[in-house]
Amino acid sequence: MSKSLIRHLNTENLNRKTDSFLAKHSETIREQAESMLRHSSADIARMSSDDIQKLLFEFQVQQIELKMRNEELNRAHQALTASRDNYAQLYDLSPVGYLTLNEAGVIQKANIAASVLLGCTKQELINKRFGGFIHSSDQDNYYVFLRNLLTLKTGQALSAKLSGANDSPTRPEYQYFQLCTSSSQPYDKSNISTYVECYARVVCNDKNALQICLAINNISEYKQAQDTITRLNAKLEETIRKQTGELIVSNLSLMKKVEELRRSKHQLVEREAKLNSIFNASVEGIITINMSDIIVSANAAVETIFGYKPEELVGCNINKLMPSSPREMNHRNLPPTLESVGQIREIEGIHKNGSIVPLDLSIAEFSIDNAHYFTNIVRDVSLRKYREQQDKEHLDELAHVTRLGLMGEMASGIAHEVNQPLSAISSYTQASLNLMNTENPDQAKLTEILHKTQQQALRAGQIIHRMREFVKSHAKHRSAADVNSLIHEAVGLCIAELKQNDIKLIFELKNNLPPIYVDHVQIEQVIINLIRNSVDALQNLPAKQQRQLTIHSRLTLNDGIQIRVKDNGPGIGEDQQQKILTPFYTTKTNGMGMGLSISRSLVEAHEGTLHFNSEPGKGTTFYFTLPTRGKPDGR
Image (cartoon, rainbow, N blue to C red; front, side):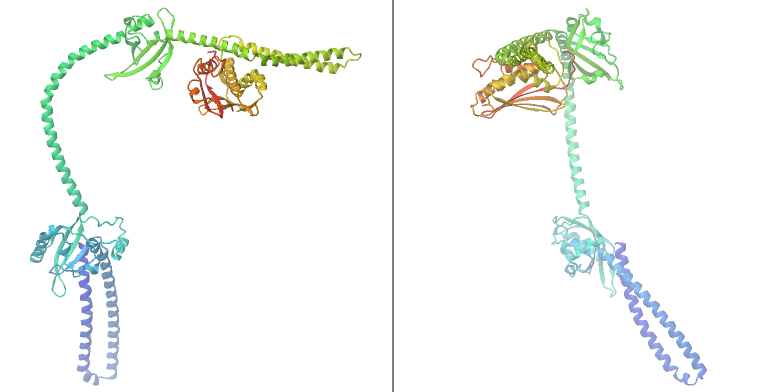
C-alpha cells in the first residue's frame, strides 16, 4: 500500500475524531457547570462579599483561561483542516491511481489519476464495479484477488489487462490533472492493451465496515518491454540453433575446403609462372622500388627502354633511370611520388648510352608484410613524340598555305588599303613641289605637308609589314599577348572587305583581361578565318538589310579567355552543322573546306577549344576559348 494513501486515510480519521471530541467536550463542560451552580447556590448565599468577590475573580480567570484554550483549539483545528486539505490535494493529484472499494468491489471514491486510467470521470466511477474494467481474460484472477483480500485481510497484488475505455483528453479532470502534474507525456488511449498492477489492503472505516484501499499503476510499457525481451530471447535461441547447425555443416565442409586449398596451391604455382611470363613479356617497363627509392625488381622490357638488364638495376637508386623525377622525403617522411599515384605524367629518362628517352610514367602503391612499395610503369613514347612533331610541322605548313590563300583572296582589298596612303603621298609630294616653286615658300606649311607625307608612307609600310608577317613561314613561338590587340590587328587586315560589303563592325571587348601565351600569327589567323566566314555569310543578305558583325572578348568562369565572332547572317542549316568543322567540307562554291578545320587545330594546339552555335535565319556565332596559364617559353 502506498505511504501517501495511508497518510491520507490517517488524516481523515484524525479530523473526524477531533471534531467529535470538541462537540462532546463542550456539552460536558456546560452540563458540569450548570450542576455546580445548582449545588453551590446555597453556599454562595452564606458567603461574605469578600468571598464572593474572590470567587468572581476566580471565575473570570477561569473564563479567560477557557477562552484562551478555546482559541488554541480553534487554531489547532484550522491547522488540521489545512493539513487535511493538503493531503486531499496530494491524494487527488497523485500520478498513481487510488480507489476506495466496498466489500462487493464497488467504487466509493477515486482520484484523478484513476479516472484518467479507467477512462471515466470521478463521478462516473462512483458505484461502478471495479471488476467491470478488468479484461475478460483476467476476470478469474481478479475475483481470486478480491476473495483473498477479504478472507486473509492482508495486502494483495494483481497484474491484469484493462478492457477498452472511452476516455477523452478533453474531460476537465484530465486537463486539470495534466496541468497540476506538468505531465509531458502525450495522452493516447487508442491502444486498448493497457496493463496495470494493483496493490490493495482492507481497512475499517468509522462505522466498522470493511473497505478496500486500492492503488493502480500503469505497467503497459514494462509489459511491452517484457514481451519484446521474450520475443528477442526466442529469436536468439532460434538463431543459436541455426548457427549450431551451420557450424556442424561448415565443419563437414572444412575438410573439403582443405582439399580444395591443396589443389589451389598447385594452381597458384602455375598462375605465378604465367604472371611472371606476362610480367617479362610486357612492352611497358615495370620497376618496383621500396621506400628508400632502391629498385627491388624490374622486368625484361627495361632493357629495351633503358639499355640495362634487370639484374643490373636491382639494388640501384631509381634516379639512375629517371633523374627528372627525384623522390626526396617530405615533411611526413613520405615520398612526393604519393601525390602522383594513379596518374599518368610525362617525364624524361636516361638511356644507358646517355641519350634522353621521353616516357609516360604511372605509379602504383602496394604493401606486403607491412612494407610499402611503389611500382613505376614506364612506356617509351619517342615514336609518339616524333609523330606529334611531324603533325605540328604539317599543321604549320597547312596554316601557311591557308594564309597565302587568304592573302590572295584579300589581295584586292589590301591593294586598296595600300593604294590610299600611296595616293596621299603622291598628292602631298605634288603639293610640296608646287609650294617650293613659289617665290617665298611657306616653310611651316611645307614642313606640315612633308610630315603628313611621312605618316602616309609609314602607314603603307605597316600594311605591307603586317602582310609579310602574316604570310611568311616562321618557327612556332609563343609569347605574352593582349587578346584585344590581336583582335584589332586581325580586323585591320580585313577592314577593306568589311567596308566593301557595307558591314557594320561592333566591338564588345572587356578591358584589363589577363595576358595569354600564344603564337600571335596563328591566333590572328583563326580570328581572320572566322571574320571572313561571317563576311561570306553576310554577302547573301538582301541589300536593304543591315549587315552586322560583332566581336566579343571576355573572361570565363574557369579563368580562360573567350573570343566570339557573331554575325546576323542566314545561319547554318541543321544538316550542315554536323559537318561544318570537318576537313574539306565547305558551303562555298569555290572553297577548299580547310579554314575552320585548321582554325580548330590551331586552337587545340594552344590547349583551347572551338565551338559554334547557329539558328537558321538569325545568324551564327563562332567562339573559341584559350587558357591564361602557361609561360612564354617558346613551346
